[in-house]
Length: 114
Length: 117
Image (tube, rainbow over all chains, first blue to last red; front, side, top):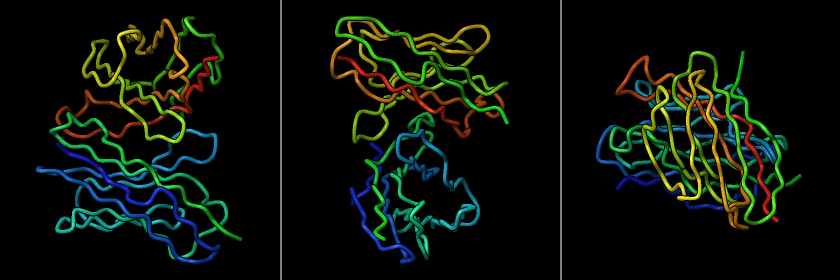
């Protein structure tokens, strides 16, 4: 069965420091991968997605993620975080086996320290 | 651009009461998904509808039912509410019919926060 693992439940980081939020997936077939962000008391917003093509995908607010098939990873990175990045980040996957239903990771809370 | 609309945004109910949550998908989207997100948890898929028919079923309790109407809006009906039903309920929509067999991005609504007292 496919699954998505986010090993870190919380990641504290100082403002303007780089951050990496880890995501690993298991899938026996081609997979689509996503990062969603949930700001406090708000809904889920798609941050970025990998469907095919270039393995490095970027968002408009400076986040990027790289699909690494050999390591079955889709880690999210930002070179310099801002206090406004405080949120919970969910990694998700979808493929044919799941009938394209999203399989969610447990989420990682990004805590920005001033 | 129009987004997914959910109503109400907040709902407070007593145990054993019923609740109805509504979801209005993005225009021309034919597929609706319902998710439940408990406090500090990841979203759990409940059920989905494509062209007014149930297409997938997840961890939806028997006390819950849902349907999609002719205008593609969907309602999640919850009966005999329990304290553990307190959660954020998300609806998402996509245009599955345009390219079946491939992933279509799900657009999420803001959620309905249900509190059962």
